[in-house]
Length: 210
Image (cartoon, rainbow, N blue to C red; front, side, top):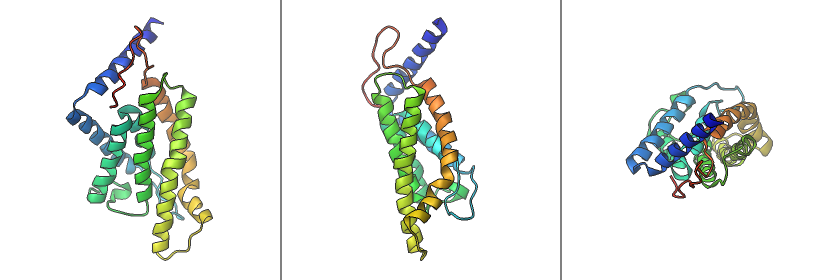
């Protein structure tokens, strides 16, 4: 029991320090998660029927939201997408610029922002089921939807005939099993590192967003 209380105090202190960091320090953390996303993008493989690769990027997106909070979680993904579009070759397969997966990159920003927002606003520590459900919804609606919308447009401009069924088969179905595993691991980490809103002495976490 005493060990649990000490660990909860450690998490509380860590989140307090996170909130009090300077802007350059927060920007450095955001850039660090952008780099992590770029590294995990290189763990990839392509399926023969879709231009969208299977990667580990989603894991970094979810972790960025929980760790950095509402604004800087989203900022880390905005840095990743923006710098990649500008020419840094850290998209999947060393790519950069616009491509078939741009919609997913935009979804990364939305998902990290939502998860960070709810992490900052939650009134109690995240339970596993709560954070798993949140991350699953973020993947389904905030990553897959803009990803598929852009993919359909990109394929159409390439001269290919597309319909809803084909877009889902190329842009959603191949990734669900892998994303469930990534969500499971990220949810476990989020449950462990997220403190309760009150410290053991009753002090509340700062309400100022990270």
